Image (cartoon, rainbow, N blue to C red; front, side):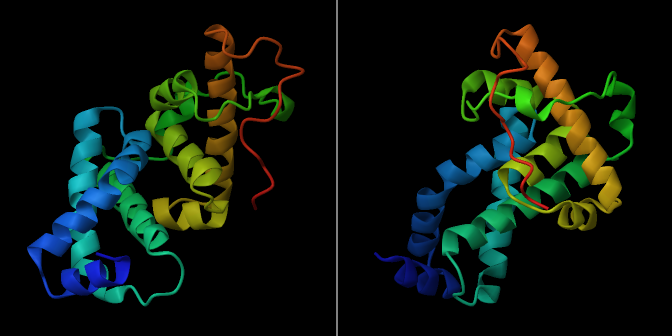
Length: 192
């Protein structure tokens, strides 16, 4: 069944179409959820809530852009709402973890998808991890992140800087990056 037929079936509440849509997108979307969560259980809860929203909001998809991108955006928003609702998300709570905030852009490894890097990202405090995921991985601007998390744009920027600094220290400690002064960038700052 092609994507348009699946979407049409889902709009008609056809269980087979819904199952097919879920089976097709759930592995990719679970990895998105896992980046925002600190446990597999939370990631699975996020995924479940996300697909409930996908099915209930499917009528709002107008066919502009990739359908997978639309699904991903719904899932990301669900993850943020989950964090706000169940984790009492507070952008200021992580300020104690800042330590020495001297992020060096040139010191990040280019092994973004590596297991060790993702493990380190999952260990970041909630606010740092969330902003890092939204900005560096999902491609949101700091203005969009501020609106999503109901914080100022400058708060998003500082959380991102602190997240990079903390991540760098973790990667150095685990010897994932060896020479901080010569490593290529892990996260591009070209986005604004």
